[in-house]
Amino acid sequence: MPTVTFIVEGQERTFDVDLPSLPYSHHGLQGSLLDIAKNLDVPLEHACGGSCACTTCHVIVREGAGNLSDMQDDEADRLDTAWDLTPQSRLGCQAVVHGDVVCEIPMYTRNYVQEGGGIRLGRRAGASEAAPAAEPGSDGAKRERLP
Ligand code: FES
Image 1 (cartoon, helix red, strand yellow):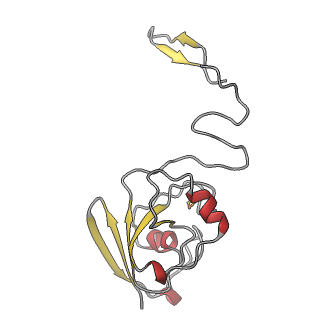
Image 2: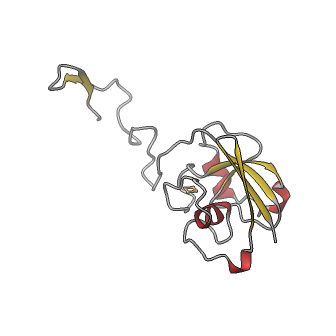
Image 3: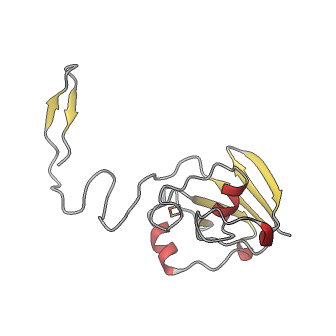
């Protein structure tokens, strides 16, 4: 029975996980760090529901990287856009647990979902690179108008 430790805001939460009896949470791959976190009420974000389309489930594996499933190309491609990427980074929804693991949930994640639209930090792909026009709001403050 694997032992999975999540480090959340510096606090370790360790669980003995009976993988065969763990109900599938329908978030990420079955038996993934996200699936386990959802079952155990560990606060791991998952903006795309675990479909490898965001990076909010980014974790940093501190121990036991060899006890996780191999990283596939789509995970590696998505992970490249993660905030504060490290050589030990994985997407929690794609990393399936096969043995003891210690992972840390980073303080910050990039919380946007990419679903074929090429969204880039508040701008649509192909949108003008020119600065957006500003207009006053009802309180007199300047507001940016999205293209
Ligand atoms: S939850 Fe979106 S990539 Fe893992």
